[in-house]
Amino acid sequence: MGKYKCILYNFEGEHFISVTAAEKALNLFVKYLQKEIYVEIDFKGIKSTSINAISICLGGLYKYFSKEEIEKYVSVINVNEYQKQKLKRIIENSKEYWDNYYF
Image 1 (cartoon, rainbow, N blue to C red):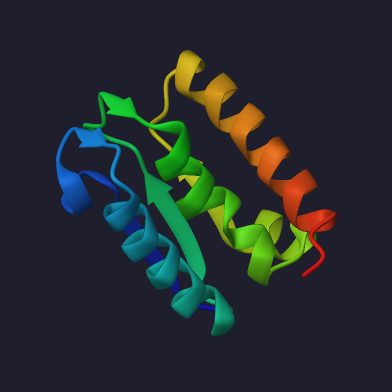
Image 2: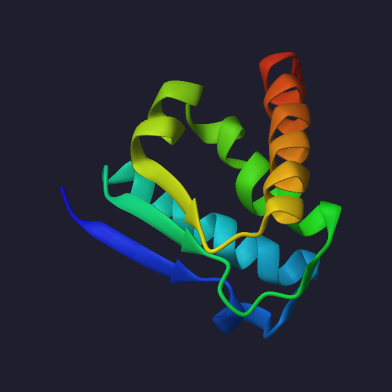
């Protein structure tokens, strides 16, 4: 199994807030995860994020993968305590949304 390290700073600098950057990140994550390549998401240098950006790039994974797959193949590093709590809430909401999504 390979490993891909994604540095979010490289998408948009210290403010990871745009939908466009989040969609690019999600598409990249999906590409690697479909090949069962471990994805490490690095928040180093990120000073601010938006709920929308995190919902798209991390929460959006639940549209394509199960909770078990995400836990096995995805990790997040270099987040402070505030960011951890924010990520946890956003991811839980996204997971619930995709679990109950009917189109």
